[in-house]
Image (cartoon, rainbow, N blue to C red; front, side):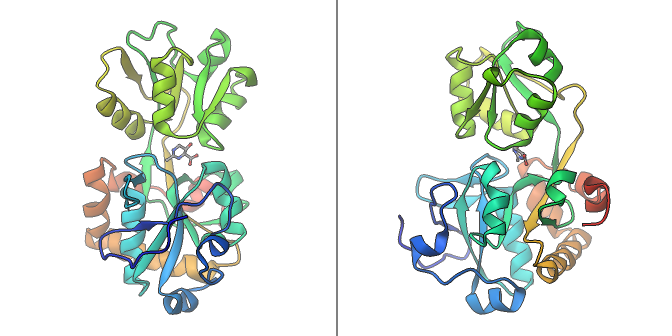
Length: 287
Ligand code: 6CS
């Protein structure tokens, strides 16, 4: 377990946490705060991230960047919270983790969906993207939808507890054909090795993987048919409504000033797409 190093202004020191293991016990830091004044006094906010560029990125040196952490840091700075401590979590462990106060919030590109809106409070939308398939060049199984994956008997790679896993199950993909991968890079490798036939992630994630793979034998099919454009937001405990509302005020100011676009668009996200969406619409009601 990395000892906590002094924070650097533009960098995040990652507190690498095994999945679902609380931070306090590992770092000796006090239990996480629950509201804005306590976070200001604490001097930092603990955020859960994945490691799925360009949404969230962790270097081998433990430095964290990516659209979601960079945006969260800027918004929290406007709120008077100077520093961030990030820990990597599987998507499926993020909501239980924030509910159990292992994190103060989730800033990982967590898609705002009705079933999640039952469990946490979301900020207004920040990062939007369509779904895509990474497949072998030429798409030999002609996979264009999750229904195609189900009917073809293809093996599909997905990240644990993520939206693509749910879409595959809902489409009727046999669970024996759903391969949960620990991180995006593993999924690309499994496809290259022929251990899976398709790997499902948002467009920007697959684009990043294809760029890094430099493998002409791999390709992307997007958008996946019969799937919506998803938009993510920062997730908070249900009890932390005042904190979420304060985050929303600062986020709205940054959307109006252009600061929001200046952070997310270099990563490939459309600021307009997020600004035209609302949490209420994505949750199917108030949240
Ligand atoms: O929130 C989710 O479920 C999805 N979000 C991202 C950024 N990647 C995959 C995951 O399924």
